[in-house]
Image 1 (spheres, rainbow, N blue to C red):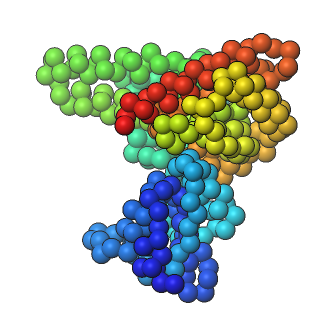
Image 2: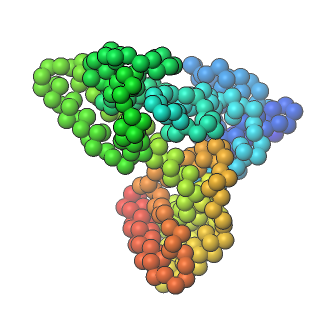
Image 3: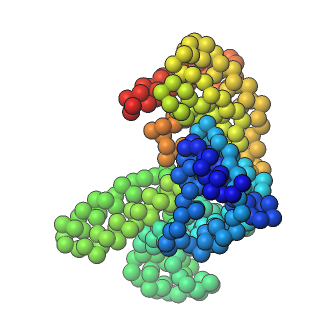
Length: 371
């Protein structure tokens, strides 16, 4: 059966598609909110396609597809298939060089730098981040607002008056030999708090500085503050996402399929532990509550926390899932279930489950209002 015939049979449903070459090899795996619309795009004459996409299309002999209940199902299935099959063009279309990190080396007086990979060298890393430009902007902000070392020389040659940065007041002047590692470390600690999102005062101050610069007709300075603000928001947001995925958290998510049906997902880190479709309208809240408590305890307590064995691929996969949950929070309700609430003797799980049921009921009402 040729591609055109298969295209006619494609449903307008979520799912995963697999492009196959003449030798029967799966060369690309993708997910779709609407299979018919997404896959059809590959077989239309489109201008300005990326060269690697054009090459992939020329290698397609046929394709396969899997229909899923929800788009989240498709996302999870896509991750699994790419991990298992390692299709040729999935690797080509993911530009690993676009990922970068902020690095604070394990030195007495380290500078904050941008690197393309994370090494096991004792340094403190933040990321990965998807925008090198915004990371560069963030480093520029840190250099402008924190008196950390900026010397380009790899060695700290002692100077009586210090370097130009020290004379300008933008550096403590470690090159004078009169700055202790502890004094320098205070500022690194403040930077760490900022980048982890634990101290947002500096970020909140930037819009005020921008407004004041505009009032003074200093538009160039206002534009610089805006760039700093965008850079910090990107870095802090991505860092918080990395932290969430790295912690291997217990996540319960419910995606609504229509006005009565929803699908329950139990996710730990990047692992899908359980999924089931249920009718929320017909469900008895008491029975649903008992069922949720049982399945939450059974699945999450059974799965051990493998935080220390998470690979970078696992973390990337978890970030994909959590980004999807955050992006689609109007259609998906999700909850973090702390491990401390999984014990049978605690009543805190009862309160959590009650909150879940209330959110599910509210979500179904929202779906009805859309129709």
